Amino acid sequence: MTARTLAPGAGGDVAAIGRRPVPWSKLAWVTLRQRRGLLIGGGILLGVFAVYMVIMAVLQDNAYAAVAACHPAATLKCQQLANSFTRSYWGGGAGPVIASGGAQTVSSLLFAIPVLLGAFAGAPLLARELESGTFRFAWTQGAGRSRWTVSTLAVPAVVLVAATGAFTGIFYWYFRPFIADGQVSEMLPLGFALLGVAFAAWTLLAYSVAAFLGTLFRRTVPAMAVTLVVYIALAMATATAFRPHYAAPVTVRGWNNGAVWVISQWVKAPDGQVLNQPAVNNLAQHLPASVQNSSSPDAFTNWLTQHGYTLWQSVQPNSRFWQFQLTEGAWLLAVSSLLIAATVWLVRRRGA
Amino acid sequence: MNVIETSELGKRYRRRWALRDCTLTIPGGHIVALVGPNGAGKTTLLTMAVGLTRPTAGTLTVLGGEPPGSPGALDHIGFVAQDAPLYRSLPVSDMLHLARNLNRRWDQQRAEDRLGQLEIPLRQKVGELSGGQKAQLALTIALARRPALLVLDEPLAALDPVAREDFLASVVAAADDDGISVVLSSHVLADLERVCTFLVVLARGQVRVSGPVRELLATHGAGLEEIALRHLRAGVPSSSRTEAGQ
Image (spheres, rainbow over the protein chains, first blue to last red):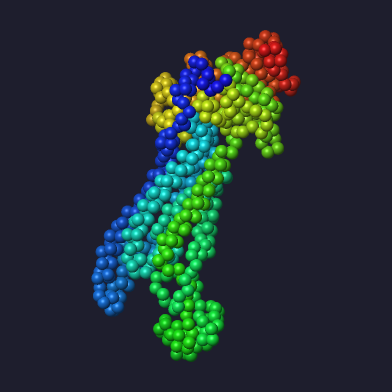
């Protein structure tokens, strides 16, 4: 007996509906309707930051125009103008009330957005269904559980990546004067996390971790908590251990090489011996008093070069920004995809 | 066509067998009462039949040979789990829209007519409905899918007596109107005695009695409650198939 002869009189017109599955557009509607609260909450969170940053970007651009127009830049007047701009808008304090805290504080808040958005969006996706028993409804509808799960995981992921990607555009505007001034360096952790593709990619990672753990634990809150721990550990390991190795660092002479990310620095003695940091510190303590007590920050390095020592740095130049962004984006995307595939697999094999 | 057919079906959760050596044939066109004490394996059997759980041992097919959980099976089985889980934060109208988008077969007119008769407002949130209204909404959604088989797991457990009467009447009416097969589970046979035409008694994970009510009554010469009790006490698997030579 085949499915076509099912249940006479039960309206069982199987032939009429054919074998075409429920279309993705309908499943996407279901997912978006179910996640409306999340969309509104996430939208408000990003929206508040966006409005604030756009307002500040306009104010900053106006204030910075005076700094940029001041010539020659080395004069005391121009230096004071630049310092005052930095104090007002970067460091906080003397600026307009709306800038209180300054961009430095705002940036550190922004750091938390990917993990907050990702954990709140990802953890409940399946955990809430499993907690409340509604999976028994969702997985027994005609669409089938695999398609429902793929839609449930993929639709919010696309929305999140699009929203955080667009948000990155505002960062560029907001941070422009600070990038120009060197407060924000693209290759250093803060700039790297907020510019390029990293912001969206880390949001996607937090989301995937949370969705996977939510399905594994079948509980929303523990999944969020563990996501936070995993995220922080991975983000720190990436910034300190993985990222410096995306490309072999460049060795350059001197300790003042402009806009670069310094991985390490050392001193080479006149006899060719390499002095590590303790040896350099030791050397600094045995210098003549005139050098030790000098107010010039360059006194020590000047003394070293005068006495035949050479200074070296191992650096990642700023020109590698996009190469590093794409490397990080690619592996984060790969890990996220694996986690989402593993989540689908967990759902498929799971019993009730 | 047999709506559910099992052969030596077993399901183990860790060490414990929730269902074991269950061989059962439920023909179509019946209102089937699946009864047994709590923990007898009723929910386990039904969740396997609707494809939520996979068997540990044996085989199970639905609707004349379809594997449970396959597209063909999902399209034609309306399932309401215990406590009628639905999305509490959605308004009734959105709950209908959601179910409609999750199914290839959907009769919106029928769903709205039923809810109108039941006086369940479409704008009300699912979480604000009474237990009886929520059960009726879940039944409405299951019926709007125009299933060949309706599976209801402990549909009466959470309902007050009046709501039970109304709910059962709805199920019988739907079965008569559409000619669909219905399987209901309950731990109280008295709930289903008046409406069922086929009885399956489960205890400790095994089938104790199964057969059409008319044949069971004729063979045993006692009331249904009496027959069920006798088999539950005796603990001997029995089937009208062998006894009545069906």
